Image (cartoon, rainbow, N blue to C red; front, side, top):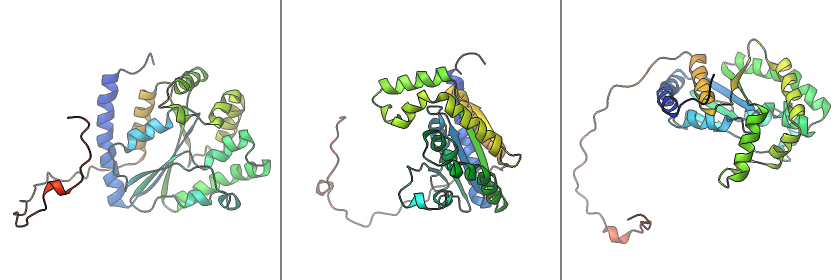
Length: 260
């Protein structure tokens, strides 16, 4: 792989893959499939960008994104997986988790937000939890976005210097720079304990965001066999004849036109 994927190639292929995502969406809806896709990885690895391209052309009633904030006081007293269970897909839905229950194996472990016992219990329970989901008929797909130290540093610097992107950097994100080795160790242990034949981790090389997005979408499309259910071209019906006198437009409040 040499250099960044050219923009024209990227945009052309993205458009093609997004058309296929719409076909997949219709298949999921018509067949009543339940699909759960997890997006994990380093900070600034490009998870959010990939998710945005997946949902850009799809129906939010079928393909929805779950990005949970830190747990509330009440949620901290619940079974660890409980708040994630509430967001699992029903029939005809695909749910994209922008970070998932694997927070416990990453940021919670490294930052000391969970005890050693809670961490060990999670590593034991996660494969069993996912096996239970799969036995119930839920399709589980796990992506890990991998970014090099140098590329992450470059993206952090870009976010710090760009007011429109600065919101993406939390104090925990900034602290992750100091804890690169600890996060690497936590990721390796997580893979050793939760990368199973039935619920494997799929690593996305994310140093080039364009390639990462295309490869991720391509894999998602290959992971779920589907058929094209695109309907025939629609014919618009004749519009109803106007037999109703509408109030004058001057009686309505219009947003001011700033761009005459």
